Length: 355
Image (cartoon, rainbow, N blue to C red; front, side, top):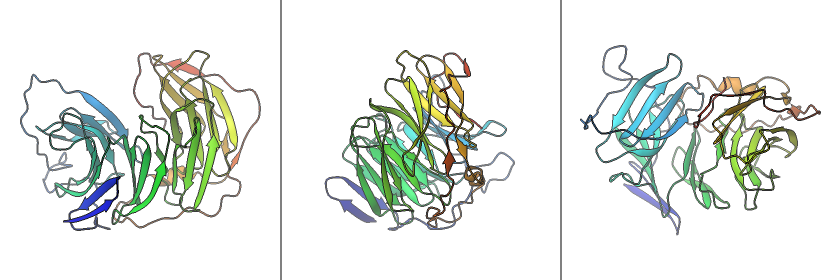
């Protein structure tokens, strides 16, 4: 067992010092049969005991989603919606479950009631081998985890840690304002590597373009940031503040504000923001029990990079740097800011996906 420590912050351990750089399989099993996506190993639980949902998260190409529950986690397929796998534990549940595309690699963070996996640890789990291949320990509770083929990003309340996936070496530490929501976005396109997170000032967003070795600070709002999302290529950013009335879209390269849409005039707690792959539509869910859908006038010039992420092969974790060609990135269209074109789906409190 190799342990690498970072003073006063975190420790990392892996089963053999490094993660396997290749050979990550997609959801397959040695068990014969059409529904054998994984080897199922489910301990018997009390049937009368209720299962509480802790979290829902999409994988990077939106073909699967993972649900963290009070007993473990479940994986669902979106196209032909069905549960394809679950793992229930007697020791407790997981509050965070993050997938790596369609691979058998998962990042898991236990709930406060999980006796085996506490909420200050991140477990990199290989379900094909049914073993932990990496572990991160922190002094405070983990708020979020984001994955891509070359990065593991872990969010605690005042700091974000960026690790290289192949050997779990710490690449960068980012100081943030208090971030109890674990706000952090990571691009998933092969040719762009972009991270967005709260800055050190109220209403500020920090954008890291890893491939370009560039940091951009965007003063997005006067109030504290409540929600944010990146396009899959990381070149556009949508944000909302704790006031919840305005959603703004920015160019992440130069920080230009491209468009602003109004959700309403009353204060609202924004739960999530979603952008369609072609950046034609934006959806916002809030505590008002509605989902607002906006038609955008932001135009991405050239090929739609976001469509190329679908079907990425997870057989290797080779690093892909950002594209150096950013000519004609976006072209804003001026005019009056539109209101929501639709307001429906009452009593909705979850994440939004636009395909």
